[in-house]
Image (tube, rainbow, N blue to C red):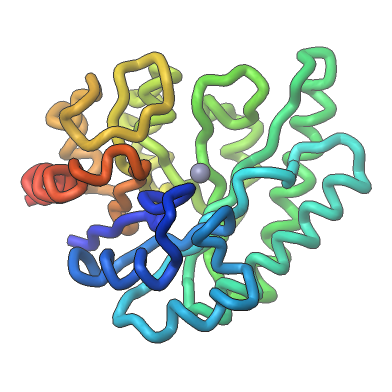
Length: 254
Ligand SMILES: [Zn+2]
C-alpha cells in the first residue's frame, strides 16, 4: 500500500521546504511537492533540497497562471512551455509523476473553443510526456463553473492518449460524480494517482477522512483498484488531523 502526503499541508504556513520534508519523512515514503508559496520547489534555493531526504516524489503544478484550455493560442503555448519547466524540475527531484490542472473557461460562450484548446493541449502533452519519460496526469477539478474537467466527459477522456488522470476524490464529491469515476472500470484503468481528502459537499475544504461527509467506506473497494499512490492532500489548518487521516486511510486500504 503506497500512501503519501502532499507538502501542501505546509503551504502558506511559516515553515520552509526543509522543515516540511523533515516532518513528512517521519510519516510516509511518498510526498507530493508543490510549486507555490513558501514550499515552491521550482525556486533555485529549494530545488536541491528534496534529494537529501529518503522520499519518493510526485510534483503538482502551480495553482495559478497556467491555462492549458486557453483558446488564445499564445497563452496556451506559454502554458505548455511552462509545463516543460515543471517536467525539468520533476526530473531534477526524481519525481516520476506530474499533476496538471486542465485549465479554465470563464464564459459559457467560450466553452467549445476552450474544450478544443484543451484537446489540442492533451495531444501536445502526449508528445512532451514521451520526450521526458515522466507520467503526466490531468486532475479533475472542484465545482466552480469556470473549471474544465469537472466531469469525466467523453471528449476529454477519449483524447487523453497515454496521459493519466489524477482522481481527486474531494473534488469529485463536490461535483456529485464519484460513481461516474469509480464505478467505471475502464476509467479506473486511466487513473494513475489519487488525491484523498474530505469535505461537506459545499466547499473544497481538504479535511481529514471522516471530518466531512464523503462515504469512503462505500467506495473503498474501487479506491483499492486504483494502482497509484494514495496521496493525502490537506491544508495547514488541519495539520493536527494528519495522523488521524493517515490511520483512517490505512484502515480503509487493508
Ligand atoms: Zn490540484
